[in-house]
Every structure is written in structure tokens, then in C-alpha cells.
Image (cartoon, rainbow, N blue to C red; front, side):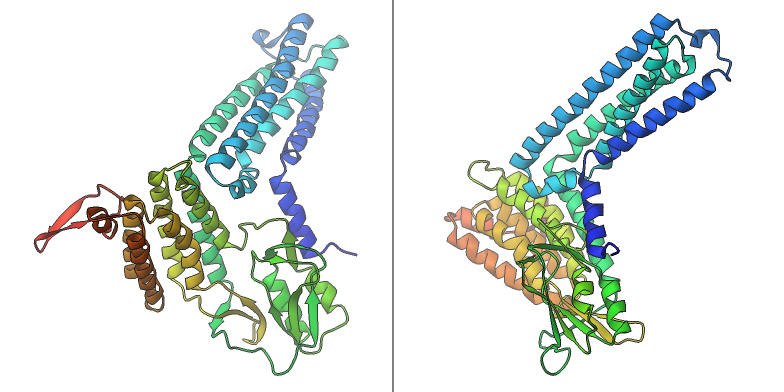
Length: 433
């Protein structure tokens, strides 16, 4: 049987997250290049400066091979430290994305390729042949490897700062929102029903896991070909138990409908960013509330998270997210209905925990208020009422907090920097920015 879409998706996820696949390819490439070098070495005349004695070539290649092993160990050590630091100061959810970093895999692949290249040439030196071109290329490869190592260190020193992670998550979330909005989704009230009567088929999950992605275009095409209407009962990111109903199918379902539709929903141990912008928001919120914990007590980091959280919410609020998402075929006929997160759902995810843990901090409360005021001025009119309700909830949280007197008044103001923001004198009073 051919591999299903869900199986192919899981395979791609596994390869993207693995730290061995690309370095393994690098090893094979290095060995292959060594073979090419040996074939060309006798056919190319090199300058005298590029010729070596057998002892010199053996020493150089041995040093290069040993250096590559050491550098691979260094990168692994750095990786362990990164995991410890990111888990302690950022969010464990972020580590799934760190595994995918392309530069890290390129660095490891470059090291393994150089090692394989040098090792194959070293065998030839032992047999009495001196691969002059290969020795020179091995030296140049070491220079390239060192440059890549410096880039690797520079990248992770900067990319693992909380604000850099928040910015990356906000950008990723906005890209997913735009992609979803261009996927042919239509919004209708929650009371919409695809057809009268009960579904002819309930497609149940064969395993337990979080829905990581769905092949919406393939589902729509399959439903069109068989005159079906499919209703997905779980949203992307939801956790499904084995035996849970994934789809309700309306129409005359063919015999292979259950197996085919099961293969169009990818389940995994945890959520991914592929089709789930709320997961990006979850990571930002995790970093913010970790900074607000009594053990850390870092409201400035939480304020920085609110900056990028506001950018992500502004992008989401520019769309109408009410009701069920409906995907139509080319003729305009409904083929797939999926539950979509509402604007209220995104606001609750982004604000509830930060408000709960940060209301007692004037800096956090003031920055939250400034963000909400900005959202009120930029989101669609249909989304403004929910934003104003969040402002009211923030007021209540500040009053219930530990503020007294002047501190309460301070927490009920807005400031785009949290505390100490610039102000403009308007109508005899200062307005903070």
C-alpha cells in the first residue's frame, strides 16, 4: 500500500527534527568527494607550494580528522547547554523548533564531511600515494568549518534571547494566519449544520496524539469526487484519544472512506507550528509567565514578550474568525468544515495568564493596557468589543492586586514601555506613549 499523507508528513517532521540525517549525508558526500579527488589528483598539475611529502600529508590529514572529532564534540556540548538554558529560561515547547535549525545541521554536516574526506585520503597516504590536491582542500575545508562554527556560536548567542524567540514566533504565527486565510476558508455562525440527519460515517482515530496538520486540499478533493461533506470534530492542536471521532461524513461514503480520511490527519506527541498559529502564541506566553514567576521576577522580559504578542494579536485581529471554517471545492460547494479558533479564544490564550500573574506588576499592567488600546484601534470593528472586555478584566485584576493608593493609579494607566515611557502634554495632562 502507498504511504499515506499523514505518514509522509510524520516522516518529514522526523527528518526535519533529527540531528543525524544531514550529518550522515555530509559523511557520504565527504567520502565521495575524496574518491573524486583521488581520481583527479594525477591529472592535475599543482604548484610546488601545494605538494607534500608522505609524512607531512599524513600528519596534516590526521590532525584534520582529529580536529573534526573535537569540533563535533564541542557542538554537541553546546547543544546540551542550549537545551538546559532554553528549558530553564524560555519554554520547553521551543526546543522542538531548535532541533530544526538548518545552520546547526549544516555545521555538523560540514564537520562530518571534512572528517570523512580526510580519513579516506589518509588511507591512501598509508599506501604510498600522496594526494596533494586533497591535502590542500582539507586545509581549506578546516578554514570553512571554523567560519561556520563562529557563525553557529554567534547565531545561538543572539537567537536564544527571549526577545529574539518571541519575534521569531510572532513572525511564524503571522505567516500561518495569512496562509490559512488564503486557503479558501469561509466563516459562518456556530449553529451551521452540514446536512439534515445523522452522519453516515464516523471516522475514528486509530491512535492517540495531538493533531499536527490536516491535508485540507486532499480532503476537499476526495469529498468532491464522492459527493461528500466532511466535518472535522477537532481543531489543529487538539489532543485526540484513540477511538475519538475525527470526522463526521455526510453523503454516500465509499468503502475506503474511513481509511483514506484517517490518512489525511497527522497525529503526533505534541503540537507543531505548521498549521497552528496558536502554538506560536503559546510559546510567547510561556516565556512571559515564566519571567513573572516569583523565582524569576523579571517583569521587563514579560513586557518584551507583550510587545511581540501584541504584533501577533494585531495580525490575527485583522481577520474575522467567528464560527466554523468552511472549505469549498472549485464549484463553490461545501466539502469540509473545520472548527477554527475565535478571536476571543486568541485573546484569552494571549492575555489571561499574563494578566493573572502580572497584574500586581505596574510595568506589566501598564504595558498590557497600552497593547489593548492599540488593538482596539487597529483590529476589525467586529473584534473591538472583545478587546474592550479584556481592558475591563485588566482593570479588575489590577484593583484586586496588591496595589494601594498611588500604585493602583499607576497600574491603571497605560505605557508602551511599561514604566518610564515618553509622554506628550495634551489638554493640560500628560499622555504616556
